[in-house]
Figure: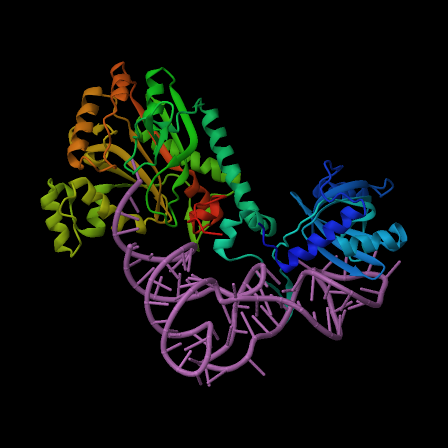
Length: 505
RNA sequence: GGGCGCGUAGCUCAAUGGCAGAGCAGUGGCCUUUUAAGCCAUUGGUUGAAGGUUCGAGUCCUUCCGCGCUCACCA
């Protein structure tokens, strides 16, 4: 049983009264001739042309302000394109209708109003209302706010700022905070630009299974679910990689997918349990070509979405203009830690060098994991400007191709900026025998019950045995790119309904 | 999971251990060109939950719930 607040009870009483008076508070249909923006622009054009033709309009939107002043009332309605002012006058509407509006309508209600556009004395383009009707009654009031003049400065009192309320009731957040709506418009523009970029370069957008009998393509714990009829456990994918590369075997030369990945890991300001990934695979290319395409793609998106290549992220300027800095992992670590990883070919030797720097070292960690932790601790946080770190240890990268002549290194890069990882790419391993050996290697490096180990994917190996063209592959977290483009400190700001712990009501 | 912090009216926030308050919103008035107007009056609370200390708890203690930051974890 719904518990109503006092404010809601008052609105419910209004709603009941309207019904008794024969006014349907939730009518089935609405009419509209212009959006708020179109009405204002149409009027301004007419005005510029001499104003001979009156602009008549029927507008819809949510009632966001109301200023009753005796026999006239000003109000603003807001639709998806902005706000427009309504002017209601007793002379035009009659006493009863005006009283009906000011008494029975509440902030938050959706209304429809018809009349003629004009400009008020203070210069605002406004609809002079001749008739209006209710489109949808709001029972729960939206958070209220007010601009106040203090010492000549407009102080905007916060509307809805509590992060928990904003995320749990994103609808209210969106309704009252236009900058939140803007984030998701930017987000859509980013994915649109990415698709345009890849489409124009001959990449085919595909969709591969989210429910997978085996997970793979990344090192992460999966979510497990179950198919009842098949009596089979299934995993929510942690990456698209192994399916997309199967498509290269099928002679689809350039493929990409934008979709959701699921990882059963910790949640923090750059990690959500489900997040949006872009992966592409490009036959006959290597990771250096992918690197060049990455710069080109990110700059293309910035040009399209923001119209500029220098971003401000959390007070830091980030210059996306290519070429981005290229830093061999070995050189970067040598500079930041003084440790030359090439001088430590074994985990034991590297661990000892790390202990000399007073670092905590997991005694069971393989060499690649130790290197990865050095990168995470010493390199990643310092990389504010876009930087490609390249040449990764082979043992943490089981799907990448070795560098010719350097059996312990693979052709892999990650791009970092603003102190976090943006994307990850490599020249993909296409040698089925090497791939099988890598799976076995990984199986040894991780305990059998470690869900992060890469399971042996026999079907993937079979696909590869049919012959996979040499190719370069790429993966990027879209949420993080959107964070950069919207100057958002937390991934939850760019996900409409981020995961929060369930709360008993 | 550890550490630190927060949770008070619909929203944003106050309140030395001593009468739970303000602004906005709401409600009732006045007001025919306002700018989330102005003026007058006024309603609204299980202070996240449960226990404890105390003459007295929003405040101190314990446990629990939720959120934030952070560390750990994590491609």
